[in-house]
Each structure stands twice: as structure tokens, then as C-alpha cells.
Length: 113
Length: 114
Image (cartoon, rainbow over all chains, first blue to last red; front, side, top):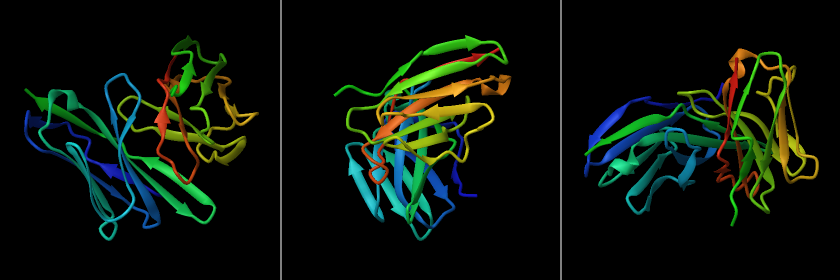
């Protein structure tokens, strides 16, 4: 059973702080990794994708991937109240002609003004 | 560029009734996904299409759920008969293709089964 795990939270950080969101996955065949943001009552929105080990930065967001440890994280710098949402980690693994995307349960983030 | 369209946005039915949801993906996107999201959980993949062929339907309850994408563009998901536990948000997403699977989601359909 291939799984994606995240701390459910809620994670609370003060405005301006760094929020750190973590995700672990069970299948070493996983090749693509995504972070989605989901506001309450809305659908998920893609904010970051990462495919190789290391860091990938986009504005205030940094995704970090460590395939050896089967770990992917999302850092949000200078957190704003508008960042309060649930963050979903999604993992895609491809094996031959077979591929599957699995979403984690999400981590709820609350940024306190 | 228009996003993923879904209808209806909300639906309330009684158990044992049937319901259908419609999705139109982003133009040019070959891969279409239907997800079920129960409150407080991550999306669960029900079925994935590549053009008009099924890639993965391993988690689709086939005794009551069916889906089709006849012309490789829009898609319908049907539930017949509905059960109380089918109450959820049904999300449609699309991606350029299955190997470039940054997914874009529609607004979802919130289904309540009474």
C-alpha cells in the first residue's frame, strides 16, 4: 500500500515567521512531488512541483526534496494571514506504463496576525 | 485560458437515488481525473483517463459508480444508487498528459446524500 503522510496540524505560526510543512512517502519509485494549497470550501491549487533532490524556490515558497529519506517539505517565508489554508502533498510514481498520484491528508496552517 | 469547469456545484439527493456530475477540462489536456474528497481528508482518486481510455479505476466502487469520457474531452461521473457515505466533494482535475501531471482542479461538486 503506497502512502503519503503529513502532520494534520493545525500548525500555527505568527505573521512574518517561517512555516515548515512536512511530507513523507512510502514508495521509492515516486518521481514527481507536488504541493497544493486548499482554502476552506475551495478546490486545491498547485503552488509548487519538484522532481529532483534539493531545493526549489518560488517567491516566498521553497520546496525541498530528499529521495533517500523519502521526504519532501514546503517552507513558507514571511508567512501572511492569507497563507492560512490546508496544504496537500501529492506524490506521483511511475513504473513502466503504470503511474499513480496519491494525495496526503493535508496539514492545516494558521498564520496568526 | 479557461479553467476546468464542473457542474452542478451543489447537489442534494436522497439515498438510493442517482446523480451525475459533468466536467470539462482545460483545452488540450489529455489526462482527466475524478477525485472524491471527504471533509478533513485529502482527495482520493476515483478514476483517471488518458484521452478516452481509462488509466486507473482501482478505487472506483464499480457496483455503483461509473464514469466515461467518450470523445476524450468532457467527462461524466455517475452514482447509482447513492449511499449516505457518498456525501463528499467530487473534484475533477486535468493535466497536460499523464507524464506532465501538474493538475488543475475545477471548483468541485458538493454532494449531500440524505
